[in-house]
Length: 376
Image 1 (cartoon, helix red, strand yellow):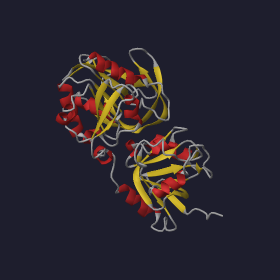
Image 2 (cartoon, one colour):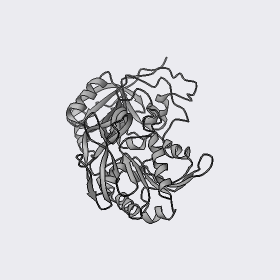
Image 3 (cartoon, one colour):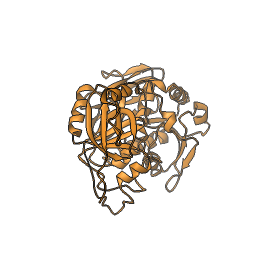
Image 4 (cartoon, one colour):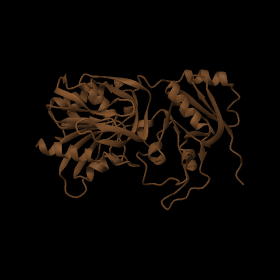
């Protein structure tokens, strides 16, 4: 018979405390408290580099029932700072499973907690906004006293001003070969890239050269790519001036550009726009986004806490010609995409690779290929 799990605490910076039991590794973890509304794809969520320095709560009540496997991770390791669930699965049951989620969390040192109040936590974050938090587990978790734990959480770093892309990026360039005949060479700047993204491009005949986040325009253009891609990633885009400078050099050279998520925010800043922190962000696989040129609505996968501040009432001028907001979120109206009107370049705030689904937006990779073909 397994021993009863040790008690654990989830402490928010505003003093709200949730009590539960330890799940995964025991110890303590600090990060920004956010929630994910996906009912599937927890392994992809956990290994998404965009979740660096975040404690993720799953709103789906039962997590871990399909275990973990070696095929679904989006990076080399679990990236979240901490993990919050309601009811962990007692048994992992799936033909692809190679282990349990709880074991994977323990092996990689990810501190988690199971609490009965994930709905209350989500409602609190929606009312008050994303905030710093700490997970504390083990037999001595409460020995410091709640007030002391709250104070420790308040001393932890905020997400504003955090430059995290270089922390999660590859150290060295590598190549994902095209599937079948090579049609295009793509330089993909890894700001926290998910493994499925270059795979989706390789499916379309792209040889993808994945480059470190700190790559300069000179590094990128030295490949003479047919197109340039900037990936998703964590942190505050205002702190990633090196990526903005690199992208400006790419745009100056007239190379076709495609960016997603963090890459969309970097694109916005390269065009002279501002970015800002959302109240609680968009994280999940059920966000409705509308293409303003066609009226088509895609249900899309999201993971971002920042957004681009751009005028939505028509085209606006940039150093690279006219641009416009191409997509908007139908839940809150925030900018979900940008496109240049006089040069080959566009971006979206969501994830068209969507390894766990949905796949409504997968055609954006085809659009990138068409842009590269048209620019030859």
